[in-house]
Length: 144
Image 1 (tube, rainbow, N blue to C red):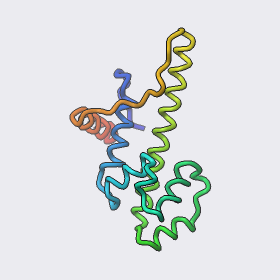
Image 2 (cartoon, rainbow, N blue to C red):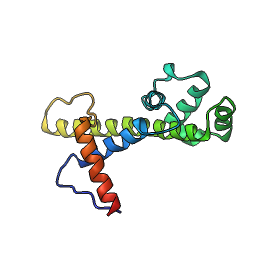
Image 3 (cartoon, helix red, strand yellow):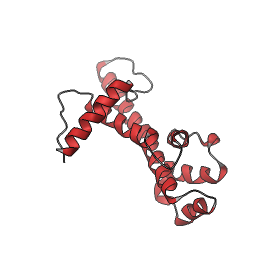
Image 4 (cartoon, one colour):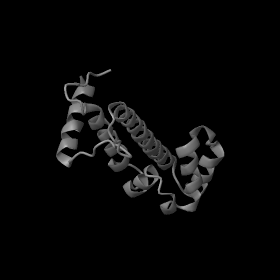
């Protein structure tokens, strides 16, 4: 496994931002807008045939079936697109769970210190320049 410097306590967030950018905005068979929509679980903006699959993958991925995939392929989605959508849904579900976990930790810490806890703490979004620098860093370490 490549070594990632940890002298900056935001590195995990930076790495997640790189992943999020690659999955949602990187090259792919599925339009970026569609990947964003499924990642953010905006089911009202998803086509009817895709809605059930996205909802299943988001909430109960273990319940997904070959039949659901066959139905998507039958209405014109390619295997590459189904894969990309699956990864985007998983990324969005992971983000929601990460945010919930971070919020729970922060609330517990603030309860023990007597402070008022905010409702949610999200992973910070980076500027384009910071994201590009992080991507370069990850690429350099992956090549090492």
